[in-house]
Amino acid sequence: MLTDDEISSLRLRFPILSQKTYLYSCSQGALSDAAESGLRAYAESWRTSSAPWNDWVEAYEAMRAEFARFIKAHPDEIAIVTSASAGINAIANAIDFANRPNVVMGEYEFPTMGQIWLAQQTRGAHIRFLDGVNNSIPLDAYERAIDERTAIVPVTEVSFLNGFRSDVPAVTRLSHSKGALVFLDGFQDCGTRPIDVKALDVDFYVTGTLKYLLGPPGVAFLYVKRSLIESLSSTLTSWMAQRDVFAYNTKKLDPASEGRRFEGGSPPMPSIYTARPALDLLVSIGLENVACQIEQLTRAFTQGTRALGISTKTPDTTVGPLVVVRSTDAAALVNKLAERGVIVSARLDGVRFSFHVYNNLADVDAALSVLQSNLHLVARV
Ligand SMILES: Cc1ncc(COP(=O)(O)O)c(C=O)c1O
Image 1 (cartoon, rainbow, N blue to C red):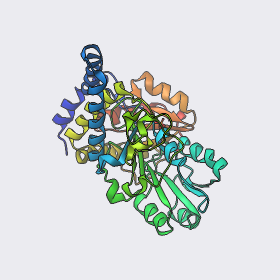
Image 2: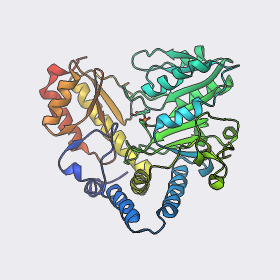
Image 3: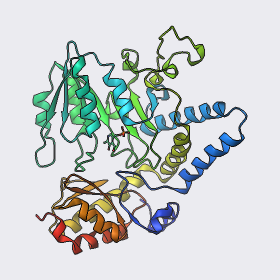
Image 4: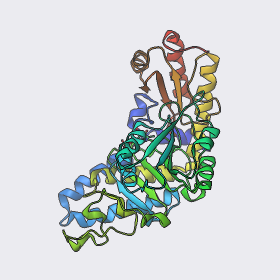
C-alpha cells in the first residue's frame, strides 16, 4: 500500500492533476512526464537516426516482451494491434462456425464486441445476447446459453457501461466444460490490478493502452493461447503477419506461427514509444499498490453516494475502478462537474467516475461535493 506522501509524489508526474480532478481514466488515462518523454524520444529518433526502422523494430519487440510479462504470457502469444477492435476482428474472422455457430455474450459488452461478432453472421455465426439483471449478468444465464454448439464466449472484465465486474474464472470454467473458447476484454481493467492470463485460463485477451495503462490511442494487444495460434487462419492478414516478413513474396501467403500472425501492417511507432514508459511507470508503482489505492477510493466514493441517497448502476460489491452514477440528465451533470474542475464521462444515463492510483481522497470529496450540489441531476434510491 502506498503512503500519502508517495501518492503526492506520484501525482506530480501527471501535470493535469494540479489543475483538475481527473476521474476520466475509463476514457483516457492522464498524461505522465514519462509518456510525454517517450513521445519526444520518438521524434528525436526520427530526426536523428540513420536507420530509424531498425531502432523502431527493436522498440516494438521490447514493447511486446514487456506487455507479455505484464499479463504473464509469452511474447510469442502477443500480437500488437492498433485497437482492441482490430484484435477482436482478427480472431472473429478466423473462427469456423460450421459445427459451433453460436457466440454468447452479455449485454454489457463494449459495442465493438457485439458489432464485430454480429458482422460474422454472414459467415454463419449466431449471436446470443444475455440480458442483465440489476446491472449484472447472472452466471446461470451463461449456464443456460452455453452448450456444445457454442464457439466462443466474449466477456468483458469490467463493463464500460456500469462498472459491473464479470466472474471471469466461472464463465471460463463453464465455457470450457462445453468446449467453447473464451475471449476476455480487459480494456476497462488492465492496469488497475495484477493480471495473469494463464491463471485465468482464457483463450484470448485484448486490451489497449489508452485507459488505465496510461498510454495513447493507437496501441492495443491481443493475447492468443499458444496452442490455438496456428489453428486460426484469419482472413485479416498483412505482410508483417507472415513467417518471413522480409521474403517480399507477393504470391505467397504464409502466416507466422506466433501471435504476430494476427498483426496488421506498419506499426504505430509514435504510440509505442509513448506507451512503453507509461507501462514502465505503472510496473514500478506495483500493481498490488495500484489495486489497493483504487479499492480504497472506490469504497469511499460508493459510501459517499450512498450517504447522499444517490442511485448508482454499479453493483455495491465493486472494488473499482469504475463507479457509474445514474443521472436524470447525464450531459448536464458532466458539465456541472466540469465547471468545478471534475473531469468525468457519460454513457447513456450513467455518469462514470473512474479511479486510478494517482487519485486521492480529495478527488473523491471534490466529486461528491459537486454531486451534493446537483442532486436534481441524479437519480435517487
Ligand atoms: C471495454 C472496451 N472494449 C473495447 C473498447 C474499444 O476499443 P478500440 O477503440 O481500441 O477498438 C473499449 C473502448 O472504450 C472498451 O472500453
